[in-house]
Length: 521
Image (cartoon, rainbow, N blue to C red; front, side):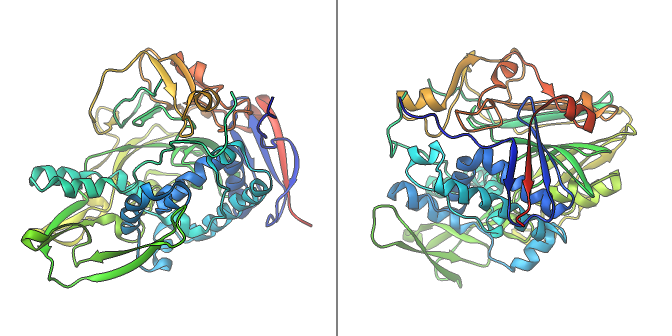
């Protein structure tokens, strides 16, 4: 019998270089870490460390996918995908980019990545099971890794719609679809000892009514691990709980001591396609992709016209097709501006923070402890003069409202193609190739809930934060050896939630394990 996969240490003491003072990590009965630190710098280093403990393989694979470096570990099948993904990254001034999210965002990102790298160093010596099966080891992170644009681009799909409306050649849409194409495995690097996922349309829904704010967030499939991670962050100037992407600091949707908020997609046009002469002026950028199994890297060229990145050519008619997207401007890394929203304490604060949110396009719903409700669309939307862009809409020019007469605000996500959905569901893991691997990493089949089958949902209660509840199926951890690998599936299947405890007393009453991170003396 093979030894069980290692599980991250969640109790006792760990020395974490870079800390100024001890940090306490209290995990509740549902696997949610409540992080208590004496400084914001320590808080975010601990957040990076804890999220890497639970989700390092997911984070590492996301970084490779988002940066266009899957070919390095998965081979030549991903060369064109990686090249197109790299073409839509930010190329401007880096310091201006950091400043656009807030004056302390770079400092927060640096601490967060320092925490990730502390766990990476451990994982290099003791590789988690996922890395053994996949066939590579984790790499160290840089703060700039958080600035990539791939997630935001994937949430901005109007360029493909323009291809259809304008009846352009399908090759243009095919090129755009290569950006951020999900990774896949055909075989495992190491044997696994020992259904397919049911899909639904992308979308989200949210509403603030009757003193509570509820939201649900659905993706194309029920994947494992969850695309969200629930965390509670507490330090001077910070006390916020909610969902985040595992590879990002802060909280994307949730609540602090005074304000609850959620984000849902809205339909806003941030992309245009231009057909231009191939003889026009352009900038050329050369790059190289490391490819597994090849001695030499793959060299390729990116052409950028005054309108944007060239994605396809019609050589017979001497035309090239360029995509202009507002996400290539400063401040458009997906969800990084949530760090400003996390600290909003009033409607005015909230809207000011959302002025920093440029991507992905979202409608933010607001509810505070005084019963005020509101909404504000957040996006970097171009002002168009004919086919040319001449500036950007201000926040006040985007749809918004505060305390409408009906006392209710709501939003519904973008509708996608729907299909017949089985009443049985499988949370599928990217490593689930072959019967043994599916048995180890996939979760299910399980019965679908009777109503909303979104894997991530929450109901936030400003009048008593401890009455808030949430679900993020199948569990907080990606490790099959963790008790929180699939412990939330039963609740999800029954349409239930777990308590999203917030106060010190409620956290203490539901404590499962406590880990102390000690500074290196």
